[in-house]
Image (cartoon, rainbow, N blue to C red; front, side, top):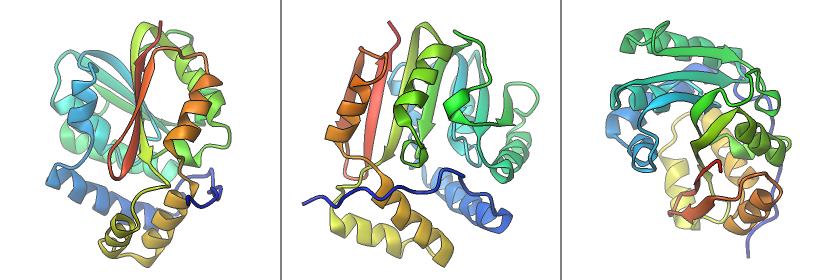
Length: 220
């Protein structure tokens, strides 16, 4: 039986020390090649101007830029600490101020005009949102007609053995606590499908792997 969802903070990681620890973990995931960058590219998000929501330290989008041509990116995160780290990492990649820029902001009220982006993607952010359908409709609004979107997040109903090994592989006590709360706040496939029905999107698929849920589609 799946446990009832426990809502998590909607403030992101604001503490600079924890943000730096999270940056180290995500950098290791990048180096191991276990980010979902290739899956984003396989979904058809390969060219154009992209928005990354909940960019964190930026590696997902920066890797996307490094593996594609004729692309640029704006990242948005509710945490100023994360935005600062993302800017620093973009400088390391050589993309900052050119192909990549980052701003602090709330996904529930995206500070962009209608039809501003060719693509939108986000990872591990959906479970933190106060009102996910509102954010889905904001994604719909800022996407151009025919624009593609990719949303991935943890799944609350993951196998307990997988959850155990995820916790064991996380060294920081603060980040272990954050991981547990993120899993407890995550959604199931059925909940995601109900959420998508509340949005303006009609062209989408919802799939699973042992860790995560994926929503992919096109704005028609």
